[in-house]
Image 1: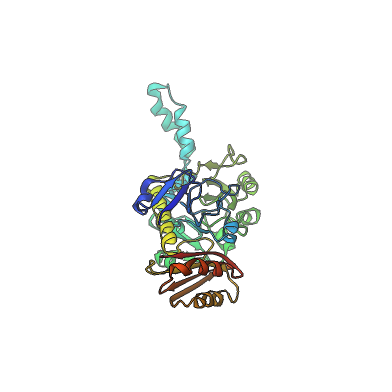
Image 2 (image 1 turned 30 degrees about the horizontal axis):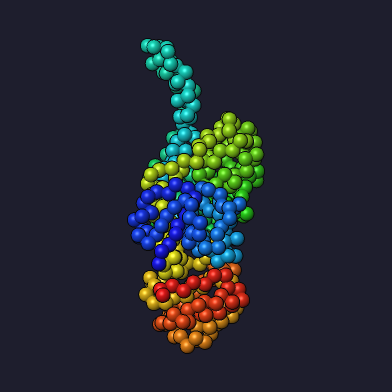
Length: 392
């Protein structure tokens, strides 16, 4: 089987460690089986009917029309954790920049150019204007304890900080990775009111948009420093600017500059550099390619943002991969269709997530003469989004 992969951004060549010779990767594939994307917006793009999956080489996926993809039976992946270390390091840098006024000091030092031997004396005289507190002993609130949040929390503990974490949906895997010194908070209000630094690491959704706004900022300690290396929309710019003006917030470090924030005193705007490391780009590309390969070849689903996880063995016999609505009678209709062709099911996995479900049906054998008819009958089942027959 030959597969066509379309790239919408420059993707690390590390993808070829996961994709074999039967994968053809280009940026102009007319009928791709899958798409690899980084930051390019796909909301207004025409997605060909041939597309089976879209893999975002990164954690955020608000550049992909996920609901529309679900309705068409397209699996959307992201790569959580692949860029975690790169972002973690930027958060630590952001905290240091926010409290030591390093940027202001560097800019002031440049103004001393041309003073010759007087520079050293000027430095000693003027450095007092850039005094700032250390991180050790301060309290950091981490909102979101996923791959990045866990690394940030543990690193802050290593720096001698007190750390409070908030994540009502924390996974068992990430909970095991947390330092035992981290205090888990069950209330965001309490976290806001008890921290010197706050860093946010949650997806941007309708529920989280503007989560750090007027009310949240009113609860914060005076002089709090806020880090946002997740998504710009998580923080209400207007409320943040007002809080900077009245001293409630001492500094806001964001990886997502906006016109409203640029030039505002107390804002350190970084041009989305959180994951801009060769290591992060390679890790994201490798993960995205591996997930795409496993899905195309075997129907395995890992790190999908719209479909349930499906952990099955690589395909070794004919396999029906069915993406459908999570409604009654679909699974029974699938098995009835298989039985109607006199075929024997050797294994079956059904998983659901919200209003979507995936059924993987392994069949002992499907004669060539029956393949088209089987696919047509299963595709005609009410609620069915997409059907593929693998391993034939």
